[in-house]
Structure formats: structure tokens, C-alpha cells
Amino acid sequence: MAIGGGSDRLMSEINVTPFVDVMLVLLIIFMVTAPMMVQGVDVTLPEANAKPMVSDQENLTVTIDRDANVYINDFQVRMDFLKEKLEKILAGKTDREVFFRADKNVSYGVVVGVMARIKAAGVEKLGMVTDPFDDTTMGKASGKKG
Image (cartoon, rainbow, N blue to C red):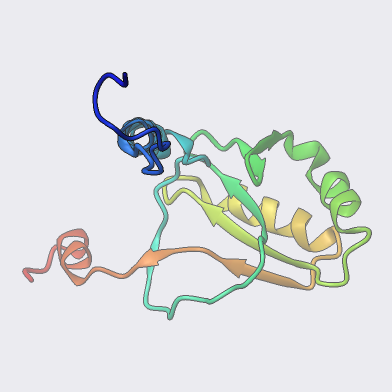
């Protein structure tokens, strides 16, 4: 005598509830951790009227922060060794292009000194990274009403 019905067949339906639970937990974890993965050096870039450049590859970036610390991508480098480090990094590359970012509060002399070291390392193209130009901030800076 069979208890619970007259069928001895196996159940062929998939129970998706545990799968949905796991996926929701993973979604929440990724939503919380994704903003924390943003890396880089925090600088206040100067503004300029230039069209954005489109690039397919990861580029080498030299950055100067507001305290005049120099970074190659995210790694801090002493100013004395910038040229040597760039020469070693660019030694095997055919594309000798570097993007340059500097905080707008860094003195002009420091910026020019870093640019001279970058060019002395054999960089053929030096791209300047800026924020888009905002007319309202220029009016305030020059004393004009916008």
C-alpha cells in the first residue's frame, strides 16, 4: 500500500528558490562593494574646452596631487626617479604615450619640472587630462557676473 498517492515517479521540476536567494545575495554584495573598487589619486583638475579623447587601451598616467606627490598610475614615485621609472616602463613599448594629470593648485614650476622629466624619458606623446570647461566658474574667478 502506497502512502501519499499512487505515483512512484520522480519529481522532475527544478526548485529555483535557493538559486534566486543566492543570486540576490550576490547582487547585494556586488552593489555594496563596486563603489569601493574605484581607485586612483584624487586631484582637482583644471578646466579646458577640449573634446574628450577616445581610447581602447589602458594608458600610462602620470599624476601630481595637491601636495605635489607624483604618481605613475596609482603608484607613488619620487620626483628624482620619475625619469628612470618611465624609461623602464616604456622600454618594451612601441606606443610611447603618457597622459598627464595635475591638481590645479600645484605650482607651475612643479608641473613644468614633471613634464620635462616625462619628455626626457623618451615620451613621444604627452596628453593633458582636464575637466570640461564650466562658464559659471570662470565668471566668478574673473570677477564678472555670469
